[in-house]
View (spheres, rainbow, N blue to C red):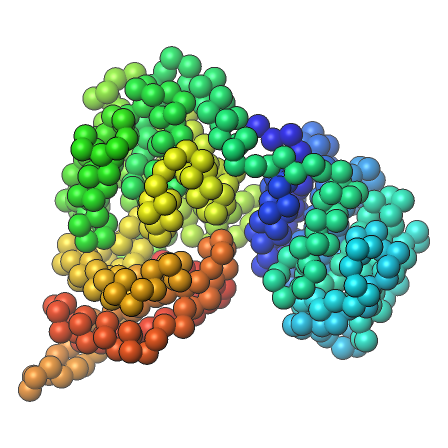
Length: 513
């Protein structure tokens, strides 16, 4: 369904997802692949251009990830960023060494007007640096197109071969003209037209689903969250009554959420879906009893979801396809190729080895969260549903540290409800991208009335983010935090302490587990 594609080759950089998002903001589809991808596979996929990411290693270390000269001889335009720039120089005969002076943070870069990617930019630009090595000598055929006071090769190029390199990171917002530089690469040497639009995605996705499913039946795993809701409506547009949407109440939802989901998608709702609600709280609690390790919890929840869907499929009869609201961030975080697993998403890395369906359909698998929301609007979903906060598939199971049981679920449901209610009362709903309460596994001594207590601590989490790949802790008004704290310790049983999480992503994740 994609006519033009830019490939990002990941060498372990922390901004690989951000690079992909910036390219997509140019209206060009972009995929991330591990550095182990073969030249033959790249040639087969025929990307319009390649971007090599940064990474934590030194290219002159034999154990570091490398690329052969064949990559640079494919005739495909290539842009190397940070480690990717050094790799290009090292592989093609230049020299990379430890820099006399490391550079970190905002740095003024002098840009040469004859640089192919800088022609419409000022002669100086603030860019984001993060390196201890530098390019000492450029390869034959390259010229220097950018420098700083301590970095003689901040940018280089061989325009005849369509090879370009930046020592800085154009993808981060601190690089003032970074998006313009990426756009110049994508639209210039790569020759892209910018056809990656959500309206065309919807049309092509519906046609693709119709062709794949044919006269068959599909079961959609509907959680009521943004991703699964958009996937359900997209599938419904494509195959109508051949689709059954199964909503599993696993007992790990927010307070009153199961009833709210049924009200939206059930018989009384506005969508003509075959909606089935399965109340499965006790079976999930039983499976999770005694389990404290986060990855194990995720995999247990993922497998039990599948087993419920298989049982419901047998009741429907002749269901070949399972539909999930998997998005690209889920795929990346669950481990892409050789990339590290950050956390197994229940519908990707958390799937059991055997699934009793002919095929799994993930119509949103190539999209980031903001793109999913755009698809939702294209499909006519109401804004309050499209811009609903993300909720993890494993639910409160990953917002409860340690063992999960019904009593702990009630604690975190009640605390979370108070937090959400007060944020709404303060009119901050639209300013915070995600906020929730989590139950820590910590107990501490407190005093309530004249009595000693020894109870749990609740942690409040609120973040602002564009894409959920990176995030910053929200700077909430202290009076709001104080009000929420007072209400939680007074109204929620077995809680005597409230903490506020100030950690960004990285180094943390948005969720706790």
